[in-house]
Length: 489
Image (cartoon, rainbow, N blue to C red; front, top):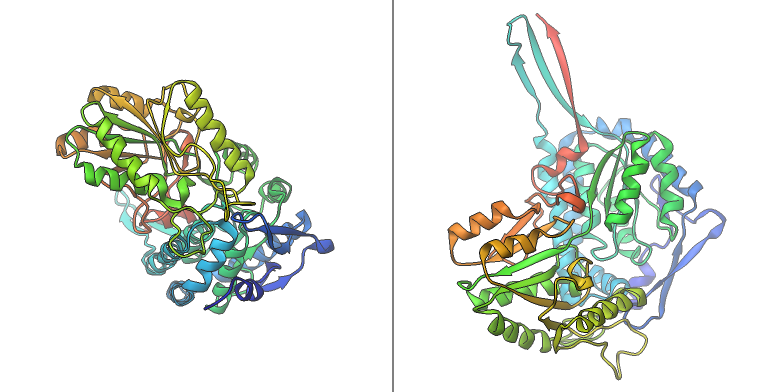
């Protein structure tokens, strides 16, 4: 069986610029920790602003040739990368679990999900279309072209360290765009491993450049203001997204922002409770709750609220917490001490305001938990609307349940947020499901299912949850400009 040590040993630790693995300027490095133990896994090159400029130089230099590269071959490179990801899933999953903490089963699921973006966009590369039409007055013709946006800047989060990369890199490669990507400093190893795979798959030098760094703002702001990049795509918090949008305005960059969420999960009296509980477990506990799509506010109709809460608590309480690489573990640690402190504070605030702890409500103690950032799966009932967790992302394994009476009340509660990424609705009444889907102010709705993400479907939100869409047939549009050629005849 492959060991963590052997996987770490063969994973690149340097910057990837212009097709070469290079140390950071001045030899700067930073440590990558195992969140299950708090121990250092390894050190990784810490890019300086000068390194960032070098990466952008490489992307700009590679752009003309890559834009002219045959679409079929762009797609074949992605297809080969998909196959390599699939073949190496066990090693990549162990690497991801080591730096991020999620159980191995979840890491394998993410590698599979990440690979599917490459497969999907390998097929989209040859379907970039255009148009031709006669001018309305008959005296000319309109030729519509679709061309690559140009060099792109990507910033990816720690919670899905590979899938959030392939979701951006895949359509960029398919469209003919080069890129510079800065992965989260907590989880750079998965992205470095991905860059190595793309290089092996035949991606030309300079098309993808990876610059891990602790100081994201120090590295990225000069690149955003440089003027040569033409697009930025960011996945992360709304607060950081706002700053990036402001900086991008100076050079009028195209922006794609997948920001925070505050997902409501609505369970009506007529719902199939078995399916609703299954859906809640998916929507709440995927990635230990560390997901922008996680069910943050669970609303159950009065007639079934008590039974739903009992069943959910039973399922949550049965989950095994521990190191993600250990057999049978279903819930790993949170990413760091700051994350666990926030979850602890949110639970304490809700309890102080009248919420009741049904299960969990604290960090586990004892052997196997020392040094790690664990928090027990938790169910709260009677959570008041003025609790902090009603407006702040929990980003942890905490399921807060509140009660509603009517459909209109449910809709008002669900929409009472600045966010609008995803909602979940469980009902056997199709008409009600359609009414709720139309009335909910979110970019996505899970109707009788607890997961909405799929490479073949558009992903994104409204309001303060972001701009643009990733995935699906619309995902590649974010990387294409539309050009009109007006022809006299």
